[in-house]
Length: 320
Image 1: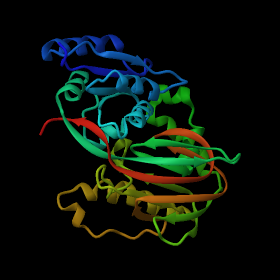
Image 2: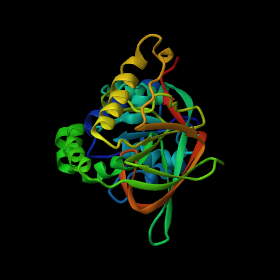
Image 3: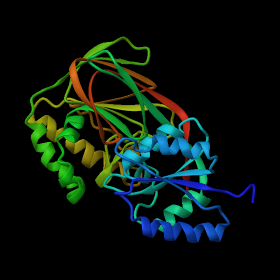
């Protein structure tokens, strides 16, 4: 039929059980009367942007990202601004966009049904222009969080083989290495049209969403569709500062704020954590530093410019 609906599946073959997904998707296509799904595999050289653009050229109704956070980020980069919906088939250790949208993580049949029959929700995306030491630059999309400092160094230090076997426990080893690193970020920090200021910090994270794995709420006021970026500067100077910062993130943000009426509980002030919001953030670094986007390392940068792109990404979510 000329107007028959069709989906595309951009998938990381390492992260999904292809046989299970094909069987479930074929049954759903037959039930709904959809055309056969266009299957497009990612690769190390192309983690999803190329296949997603191929799906757009084919005129599909929805593009499913089947893989980890890196696959989702790459597909979202291609779909941003297109109006074509992104469906999520979560896999891997993070699944951060699915977590923040409160989508199911372990049910293939349910995830596929939502992707094909759910409703469209417009959410924000963010772009980061990365400036390199050699004068080159590149621009990338992210949908969850981007960071530099301890956060990015931790990812670059993580053992990939251990991560495959132990998931997020692999980061414990990397955290131990990075915590012994005395290096601080020295940054020229400008948010929106405010005056630039000099900042010293261990980590700077810019978020479109607030929740990390293990249900840790790093950015308690972040929302995927509020049109602003949430920023946290982590700058503990002593062991007590680290304890206070982690206590606020894990206990106050992660437990108290989720209780009934928890949002009305007065927020504690912790000097080691500074929160702010804005639409554009420009950072210039005193020396090259590691950068990460949605959990993937993006190398060394001497500066970054981050902008929010409100409502630019359409995501399939369950019907009300």
